[in-house]
Length: 540
Image 1 (tube, rainbow, N blue to C red):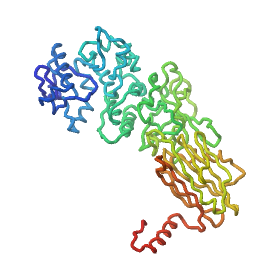
Image 2 (spheres, one colour):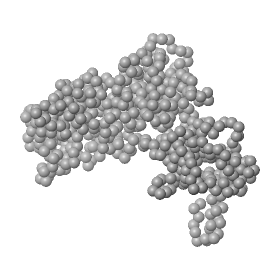
Image 3 (cartoon, rainbow, N blue to C red):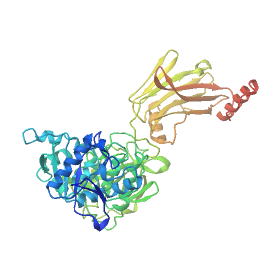
Image 4 (cartoon, helix red, strand yellow):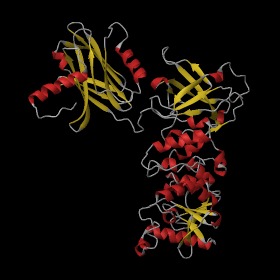
């Protein structure tokens, strides 16, 4: 650990038991910070960051502290090994400090006292790294931009609790809080880099793990894997909500999903048959599964109860509804809902026969899904088959979508994910098929259903069943050739293009007069083209 001498501003390195008593600084980074390499440069003394260092050193020295730790200049951030060690050790360094000075550069005491509103509006409360800097030290003292004391963590507990959502009890003993509650404390905080949203929580959960900058949102997934491994008795890690209708895996995409989980507490399972969840690869195996009625008779739905509850309703366990997903493994059916239900886990009621013999394999992470927000999609549909003896006889587009004719073509827009559009075509010879336009994991896709029995089901039912059954494929289909009932094939292609400055999915639907596969069609076209242009290289 490298410490700054408060008298000389010289750096010294200490190891393990040699580390002396020290003060520590908590702050948010500005544009003119002074790094370890800049500290001895003369020109660095003109930076705002240097004034922050000297001001903190003067404060620490006035309180009798010879040594001080400041993250900007006491860690060599050009060394990935040292940076990794510092991040994994940071909670402990703040915990072992004698006093933490929290410097609020955007607060000012004009009359010797700051208002509660101005204090709570400080950016210091919005940053990811300052969460552990608030919780870990034994003493935290807040200062304004002129190093005038605002108050201590103890004296300002009501204001801090209001702005952070951390109860006074949890602030005094943060390690006793549930995983969901701790996640909620970070739900409204931000970091400059995506990975730091996970790395800044390592100390809060008493974890260490390798840092892999560049992994993006995968860092938060790794954090949850680690938590399941060391805290398998706390199932509140699955007690999150997300306003997204798509089925998902059991892992939350980000801390923001726990914004409504601050009042969740865990309890000790009273039933001796309880087995903690276990991870097998990308799957989570949980027992205590109960079948429940689904939205329709053909949808198999199950309920898994967790060993956690809302603090105001401790006798009702939280539960999650599951539906079959990709490759037959289960997924969370409605990420926007946490159910409250009775469970033998938190009561002395006898367990129903077979309750703990029922187990399911559930996706941990939503397969192939993107964390990014859904982007509305536009389709431009060319229909050469209308000049080949076919006609459009029906159409349906699910909610939040539009389908309309324009200049001899059709246009469609999808405003939500999992949207499905259906267009029915019938030929002069009686051949018929359905064209499916769909969005899967924010990717456009096309499909063809042959043949279509016109009596039942309706196009709306087709769209609903297609959405529920096929959702979650690895990639959207962008080209296919399918045989119809007679001698014809239907060829559908989908290409992304920029039309009039807008990203558009261009769909072309045509009829082929033979029974060749799509790869054979391409090969034949290549052969014809190469025969006319002998010097041209084939793409096959």
